[in-house]
Image (cartoon, rainbow, N blue to C red; front, top):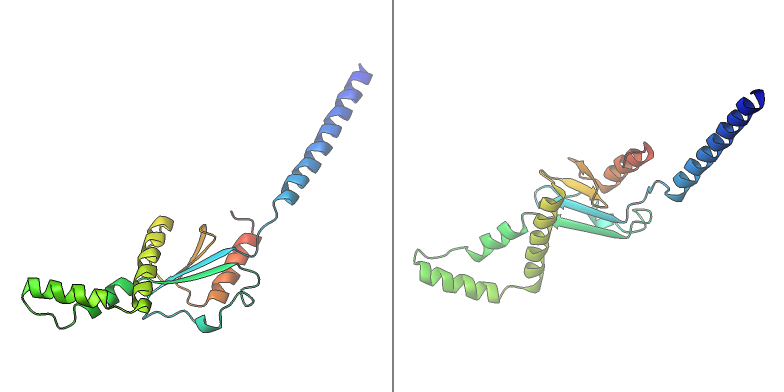
Length: 162
């Protein structure tokens, strides 16, 4: 009887040690990622991101992509296109179409990026700006400095939140 009890204790001890090491291996296999691969900034032209001109991959310590979306780009382009239109709807339609066709590439790109930004903001559930999203899973609201938002993200990751 004593032999059985000791054998069971030994078996439980061995299984416990194996479980402990298996858990350690599982944690080691998926380290906490402190450097996001994708940083997306959602803002408007009247709420500029601090130091945006100086943001680059080196400053972000290894991040692979940084996208800045000015969500008011479509509204600003619409305002340019409809500037000084006449009361006649048919004439206004022709003028807007002509202006649209003559639009500069930069304005077209800005409008497309704004549309993409609005779609992404909806996809992520971003409901206010400025907002900085990391890897499509963590968002920092109200911060206009990417470095400060990155510090918040890293703290969040270090605390083990997923």
